[in-house]
Length: 214
Image 1 (tube, helix red, strand yellow):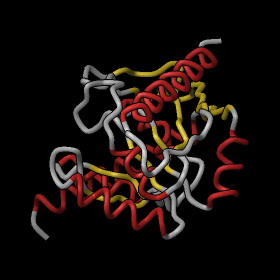
Image 2: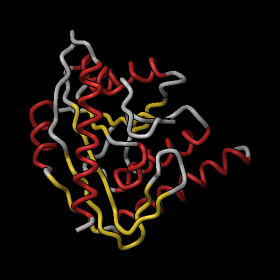
Image 3: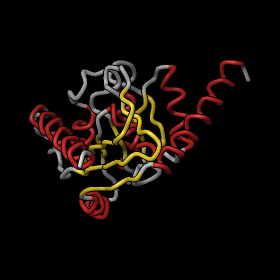
Image 4: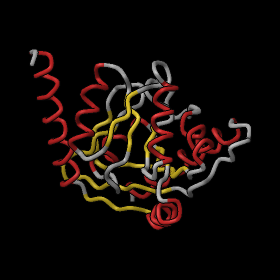
């Protein structure tokens, strides 16, 4: 094992451990979880969508394991993929800029086989809270519903990154809000559905932030 490989492995172990501790010390409430449960019961697999800047909370306390997660092909993505694997999530490598079509095909196989997937529609580099086409294209190809998720924690650190990445502080309160699942017709123009996804994610995010501020 090279020194670089060893550092990546160490970083993955450390990152997974920190996420587990963060999840265990966060007082989390789910809003409208019955929507997610009903969608999974009906369709067996779903497509979770969340904004990139709220990945920490969702990775540490994701409601279900074995979910395929689209992860960037960058070097940072290598470490993230290893962390997700240790959290019993399944990394699928690719992005909108490198290997995006291949990654979407892999996710399509994954979802068609009855396993759920998760996508950050504004990743990997933004613009923040602007949905790309990946999630709606996947929904159109598979016939599976998109489940929008919003997440917020207080108190939390907000990084000076393009996505204003949020890291819950130890002992914080947190809310994950589940939006209304929706389907994307396979033969339709995807732009209206992309816009609907963007609006649904913003609504779920706004609800989570309002609830955690109470």
